[in-house]
Image (cartoon, rainbow, N blue to C red; front, side):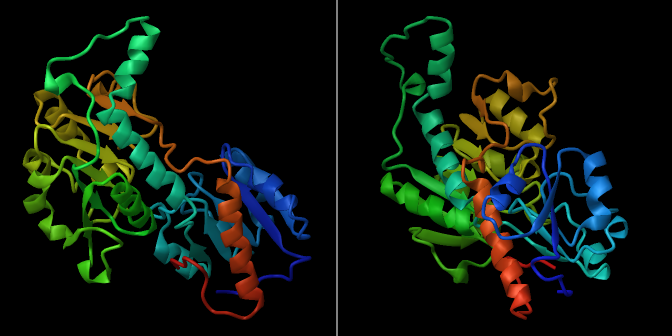
Length: 324
């Protein structure tokens, strides 16, 4: 990566609608000059001054010409599909992801969604608001269930998927991992398969959890064919990216009863349009892309950013989680 100014001359910018990275970094008293933007207009105004930029959601690929001093972008998110690698490389800007910063939060969120569906917590909350005390259920289909003994397929076995596997094993589940390269390791799963095996193993799953990155290979991974391969009693949990699942086909599967339900932290378009049927389907539970939200998230990202700055100043050639 290109040279950066010394620590007492560097200017670091943060751009996010909600995160408080500037305040958290300033509290460390490291002597850096920091700027912060909450809007695109504020971001544009500070771009000419920046040596380093950390952001999520506000990036656009026409930024490099507007930021002539910029040499390092630290993504606040693990996903980096919004960054054009060729443009950044041509501009001499290094890019690092925040992979691992949300591993605990997202894996725990996935477990929470699994429990919410099996324990019928969304229904219980709805009944609470109606002041309705539901009686005991004779119909197995409408009863609460348990995770122990169920088969879980985890699609994506990076840091999030690996921790999710370990958590699921603590719930006494049988866990099947799916990853691009099965030889990379089991991460504690009972079985591991490549992505091409997914259609064949889906009929075994009681739960399918998506925690894979969005790539050309994973776009539309869950589609009419793969959803039809799932059991009618199975749940789909998406904590990856909305476009990993064909949303129209998912809605069709939920309406027709081809799968029992879905819990979604992500959707193809965010915010989810008011016209989407997903809002009102009784077998869908939605959280607004908050799987990675945690009170310590800013500090997790800043730990990566500061460690990478120290690497550059020490003359090292690669960053932690370097993409470009």
